[in-house]
Amino acid sequence: MLKLFKRGGFLLGGLLLMVAFSDFRKQPALKAFHINGFAQGTTYHITYYASDSCLTRFETDSIFGALDSSLSIYKPYSLISRFNREKRGLVPDLHLKKVVIKAQEVSKASAGIFDITVMPLVKLWGFGPDGRPKTMPSPQQVQEVLQYVGYRKLYFLGDSLLKKDSRLTIDVNGIAQGYTVDVIAGFLENRGVQHYLVEVGGEIRVKGRKQPSGEMMKIGIESPPGEEDPETPVLIKTVFVKEGAITTSGKYRNFYRNGNKKVSHLMDPRTGYTLNNEMISVTVFAKDAITADAYDNVFMGLHLDEAFAFLKKHPELECYFIYTKKDGTVADTASAGFDAMRTRQ
Image (tube, rainbow, N blue to C red; front, side):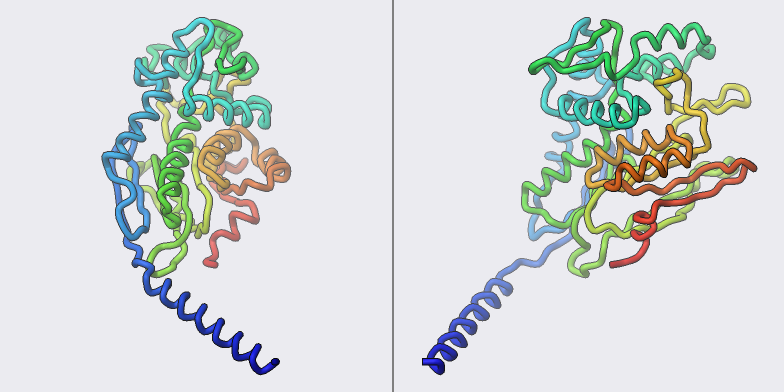
């Protein structure tokens, strides 16, 4: 009986091996597909590996169009523009609802450093659709605007998104591109794609490996441009990512000069003025791009010691910082988890 059992086991194992080998032989080879273009005021690059095309340019354009119709403050017909014109509020679509819920979550976690109700300040300082102001805002103007800024003045009631002050307006540009990356990544995963890199305006989400080589996805981090050559960024770090998202926020990305003063687009909703600390740029790694995109703004609003204290409370995040030291020189540092990503695995 023992001999028969062994023989049966061998035959069964052989059959399973033959089936597995047969299934392996049937697996089609994965090919690289690339879609590049311009959307949301910036460039995008999508690379995915599949046996056949799973995402077309037409479908990509449709995704961007749907997101713009919901979240773009530059489109007067968008849902967010309608909300900003409303005195009370409206029923948001799924995109706006998801983005606002995440924004409110991060606002609470950061004690208001990140705040999408900052829109009136963004406009006051000349970074909204109306363009640059002829004169700098006065302290009185800043204090007036601060009366209707604050994430606690924005809330959900049933299916409706409402405002406590009719003058309140929102701007989700600090989180929308990360959300866009996640939407495209989700589209690919729903089509069965397990290896991809999606990048929109420098915000990146990765899953899987390059095919057919099996190499890990490699992401380069650039230094802020120098004053002498602002058009030529320098690659200073390379990280290897198995799965997750990397986004960057920096004072150098959108600013103008008022005399000798550099005015950044990054607002501090607690003071009404542009951020004024040692941070130059922050790169964040998180499980998804909407989370990384929101928190890179938070870290830009913190001093370096505050940033590391915040990371201790949020082990799901990893960061790389470029900052100005007290002597005026530029330095960089990173969390241990981020440093570990510099090694191939």
